[in-house]
Image (cartoon, rainbow, N blue to C red; front, side, top):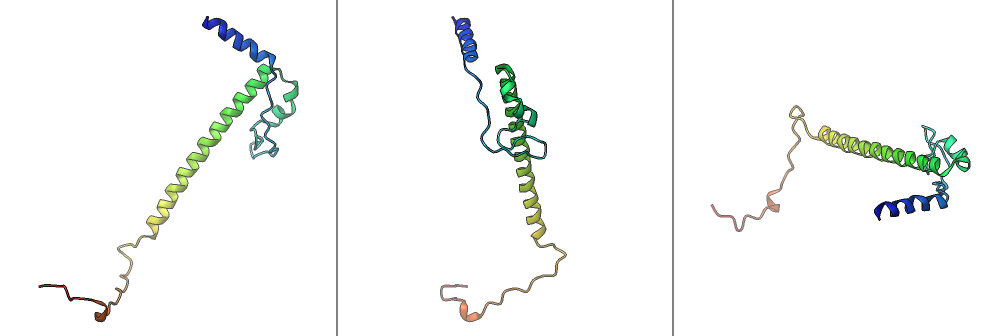
Length: 117
């Protein structure tokens, strides 16, 4: 029974054409991938000539590219966080820095009414 359902699902996929992953953002990044769908120039141009099997392979490659891009972006975000931490560390005072002048507190600002010795 399970094998029969699997065959029906596979055959059913053949009845429908694989839709284009285009999202209408048709610009290329530095690697030549579309910013919207992550297809190469050849993959975009030859899309209408591909059979469903090749279209699905292109979509799988686009999914892999997107995952790599997200991993790269996540790695950059971690590097940025680490660099911000380094900047904060650099802003901390060094023991070699001259001491800052202490804030002068006037006696009339202090209330020693409840203070006991």
